[in-house]
Amino acid sequence: MLKDKSAVITGSTSGIGLAYAHALADVGVNIMINGFGDADAIEAERQKLEAKGVKAVYSAADMTKPDEIAGMIADAQSKLGGCDILINNAGIQFVSPVEDFPDAKWDAIIAINLSSAFHTIKHAVPLMRKAGWGRIINTASAHALVASPDKVAYVAAKHGIAGITKVVALEVAQDNITVNAICPGYVLTPLVEKQIPDTAKARGITEEQVKHDVLLAAQPTKQFVTVEQVAALAVFLCQDAAASITGAILPIDGGWTAE
Ligand code: NAD
Picture 1 (tube, rainbow, N blue to C red):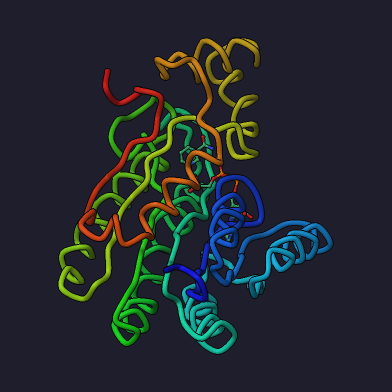
Picture 2 (cartoon, rainbow, N blue to C red):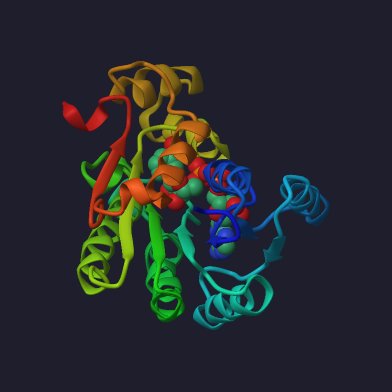
């Protein structure tokens, strides 16, 4: 049923976003990838997606810029014929105690991790209504449900994503469109790898201790969640079997938020 649908996935040049792109391409969905990185590496990923027999295009839209976001959704319409599936996934992290947290980092995290989802949804919903079907999936985080110290902007943004998810789910509930948030625990992607040195500095411990005593301390399974597990949940949410799941904030966190 997903064959020939089109998906826009923000922040899909690496990590969880790239895994969503591959998992959806595997079931026949045409893909628009987005995000930053080395141009050759992005083109290589685009070609790998096309090798799965789907259309794959790249948008360089910056998720801090509302006009570029509007342009990205318009491009999806002109290049892929619509935006049936929207995955808001772009995200950055910065770790610091609140009193030292730089204003510019707060603004960037709120723009990329929270406001970009408002802008994509605003432009994608009319296309989904026109198509009579849609799926919106927001990558939130266990930090949409619980907090950790030193992550004031990230935790605020992810709690905000949970709010956007619930509001829009209600607004489109009778339009054959579902809106859900996936809340991963720790997944070993560049985003997490980058925060290990900062957390080590902030807490005065080694990077190895951060990995085992801070990150995995939160996950009762003592395993990192994998990008493939997160992507499989997204593919399920796109299926007819998931049509009654909407407005849900879904943890995939090795038991973290059960504690
Ligand atoms: P990642 O660093 O591998 O990927 C982030 C993506 O966002 C990249 O493609 C990057 O280019 C893109 N991006 C960053 N700034 C952008 C901008 N201004 N405009 C467009 N794209 C931009 O990280 P990831 O771990 O795969 O994170 C993806 C999402 O998953 C994020 O929203 C993150 O908060 C969330 N998440 C991650 C984890 C984890 O443990 N890795 C856990 C829970 C939630």
